[in-house]
Length: 336
Image (cartoon, rainbow, N blue to C red):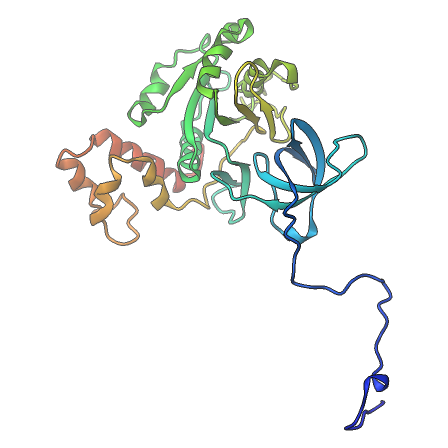
């Protein structure tokens, strides 16, 4: 082994050549101040289609972003070839701060949360009144995720020609959630789409629902020029629908200013990531009453101050019941 003396100079030091010929690593990252702004429309196997100046541009995530992933609805900064022509690929170098996030986990025991949609203003929970039967537990879970993520909920009830909506609407009357009731005939004639569109104008709305409820059929009616393959089929054995949408997709709302985000049908909606203390924010009439709650109060225990708050007449008891029913969905598996 060669040893250097006390009086070595630069000529005595041996350096290994950089065989790859690339630049040495640095923690300094470029700011990309001249990057173009865009919105993620869909994600497919690592390739992201973004809207840049009213044209679709295919892009990939820059390595410098690390494990941070962009999802549908994200506002991003892009560099590279932004022409949008065939066989070109831009690079996403920055993901802007999100105003809202819809998250879910595969189940309540899964600690890994998945971001479904970013920056949506509204969550439209689509459920059929029959064929398949409505699943209130799943609706409750979607509502909790909406409240936690900063989205306003909207109930869209389909197939009213097969069953009346009164019983289901009674469950959510105290939550003051806007709703639209549709039928198959109305969807075909366009009348139902017009009523739903009135709730979507000027907003970015994510549509969720389990398979077979007619969610994609409704999206097709709202965005006819971007029709997606629908099924209309329900498994005769399980009573559940078959998946027709395989990836989230943002589409411009036809005839109005707004975005419709179609998401794959879900069979479950895990809430392992939800912090119950954030759900109370969706109940402004109850939130002041939590000032006297013990630390880390679940709002469903003997020392909860909300009971006294309601008893004093500050809020309707039905509202407290609704809050506790939603919070309890974290303790009950969907379908129990």
